[in-house]
Image 1 (spheres, rainbow, N blue to C red):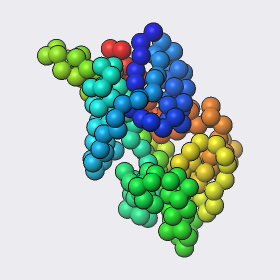
Image 2: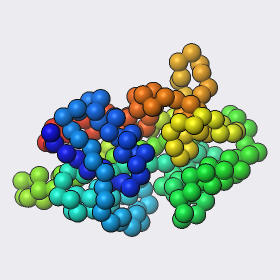
Image 3: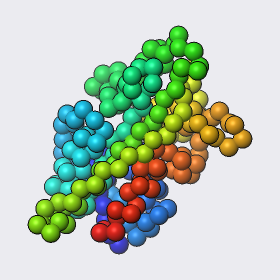
Image 4: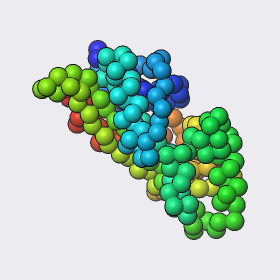
Length: 204
């Protein structure tokens, strides 16, 4: 069974990715990354995803996946965006990030609380090119929705408890934090990005 390393120290992401990958490529085993964390100094999701995937591939010698993702709020011009994990400071405090974003949007009416979860996945396969270098691919998935006025649901992580995805069955208005793991893994921005990635995984 082939292995692919997921370039993150976030166990929630490893669990979520493993479930998404298993649904379409059960022959692949997703393993966590225990190497050094590179400096994510890119200004786009794609740049940061490539930085992480390249570092993991170089450290392990294995094909590497990296996801850079966040919530992009229309009225904030797409912020927090690439700064989603650090919105309230460099401690990566998910609760503080969520609370700060809700506070910033406290006076914004519901029709203007539109947002998208964006996931960009980079795949780096070391030594796979004809010249012996790495082969790199980048794909993106977008999950449109809007932001709730208060957190709801204990599932997921990050901004999930305040993100209400569009087009829910029966017109439901649940947050992603109220989705089951199976529901989220089928509909999320990461699932959408991975769907775009599947045709590129033939070399693994």
